[in-house]
Image (cartoon, rainbow, N blue to C red; front, side, top):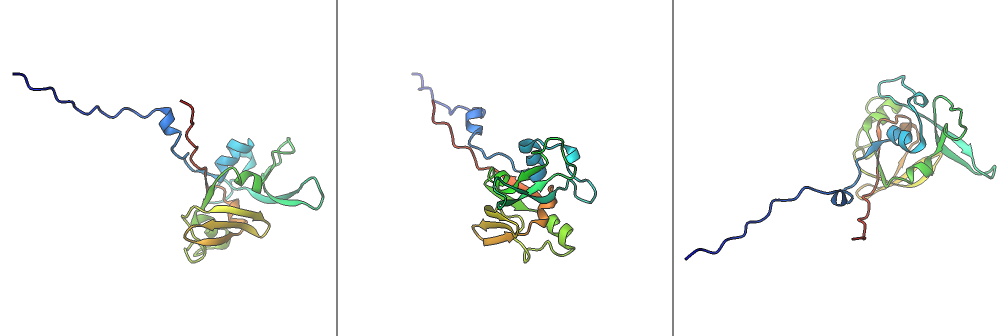
Length: 171
């Protein structure tokens, strides 16, 4: 009498694009996000210093002359009037969190300023408000934190992350 055939589990199938859509996108630096989202080129960043690329912090008037907003400004003005300055609030709203590398603080404020007692480095923080006094951030463990605008000039030391895309409900 023949023994019944046992069923073996099938090997795992390779992941498809649908499964990968649920994975969060890889974090990018502030410089990379300005290149991708705002169309900046390498000539718009500064390269003088130990951690390039660099950008400037500026401001621009909105429709009403009383509405002045902080923005990321290029080192070299572009011929297109709108690509040389990118509004901070609008640009950072495309991301769900940012993380600051201690290099940004040490380069702006001096050696020894990149410690956990100064700022919560290595933690993903959400942006609550953008102003000339700095970025008001929120972290689950840290609570309310203010990031001065100066460290944002070290565009290679600011990391931005987007939330994972919701899976598509279509079959």
